[in-house]
Length: 360
Image: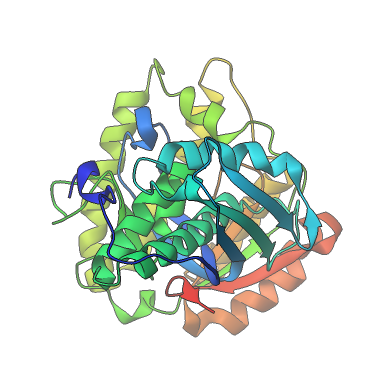
């Protein structure tokens, strides 16, 4: 598929008004995407677990205008209140996708959105939020052109979501999603996410993710700025090569259920992401002292008990604690006893693997 395959050239039906609601989850990358080219194209492939509990619910109400406008017409409500400071991001998103959805200026929209996790919790809502909105817009296209296939619907929704937030393209489906071309993965694409096509051992099909909220404040550095720091980074090429190599290694890991190798790759990826930030110009340290305390506690617990607990990180201080279903009771007791003390106000979120967005 190319960009041109996603351009809506004509449609057999007209739709005057309606309302659509989607619930779309967040995701957590195992192999990290860090660094992008123009038009939200990733510098390296990534793979993620789709989550379940951390999700955004978006309702898109639309009404056809008497005549097509020369600007986008929309109102935005977040958890029931007008949120005008979110509007520039939506405006930019609409500008990026108008070529592919030329009906955007023919309607006025009301976007009502809410998150299942606390706002300003330090959990990125761009992936869940942009994917939910992209799915609502695709539902309008489907009403205008009912003949589109489910496969095309999901591919284009992922393609559109990517133009709002890169990682959002991995939230449409689940449970393991890859985004970015990799020579060893058929049909992998820089344009949209795909369901991981190879064998996946049972142990990875019901994994848990407990998210420890170490720092709920605003991100120290925006994702856009962080990705831009990879341009000219002295270690960038090696990092991009490493991501390809780790995806290759994961094929055997996922097939055999080799948890030791899974842990090594996932934790190395998390620390590499932060190492790239610490060695950029300007440089940032996004982990907090409590982040390091948690990591050391996890390592000690693993060594002491033989548990398959591990951690991963996004571009911030919060810690995602990953562990298989069969160890959930033991690990959860450890989290409550040893790790929650490092969370801001004792807050954490229990999540697990999910299977993508759904229409409500």
